[in-house]
Length: 241
Image 1 (cartoon, one colour):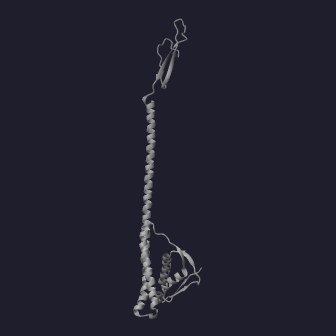
Image 2: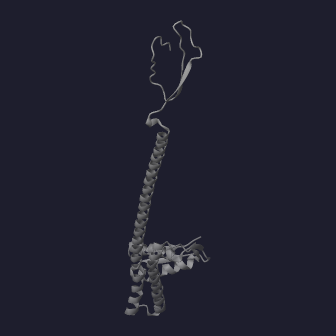
Image 3: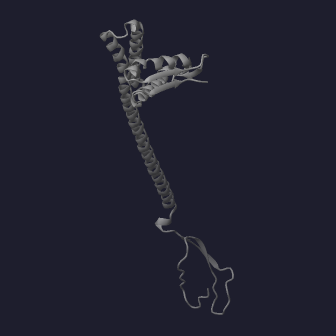
């Protein structure tokens, strides 16, 4: 920069940093001092651009990212907890519904063996079929055992709550089992004027099942069949391979 006769120099908008100002001058005869002189100048940055402020900015950014991340994690955890509680509530509701259905079903099933017990008892009291008293007593005993098993099923409701209710299947020959269940309804069928027949093979038909559940299924089928079969009708139970 040629200053001429001026004795001052102004620089604006210089970025912070270190600068060296080199000056050369001449005398009135126009002879220049080539060596000249130099002046070192340091321009400091404003306070918001200093190193410690950048460090503070970095800490604030880290804290902000950490805060956002923690908020997101807490939100996700809260959402998960709510979903878990909803799932647990649904499971409890489903267990209550299952217990209610099971209780209602078992309570309804009490009617069938009680009805099958009443028939032979009435015959014994009235003196009918005295020659078949032993068979009637056996029928009463079988249906009493059926009632006992139903009571045990009610007790299984407690196992259901603790998750201890499991299927315990084992091999059974369903021919004699189904015949026995069918014949338990023979007295009731006679009282209603319905012919009840059982047909099964001579050989064994073994399958894996839990006896109490199988008895419940067959008993319900026979009970409904007797309920909806008119007088003079015919019910045939068949077992085959």
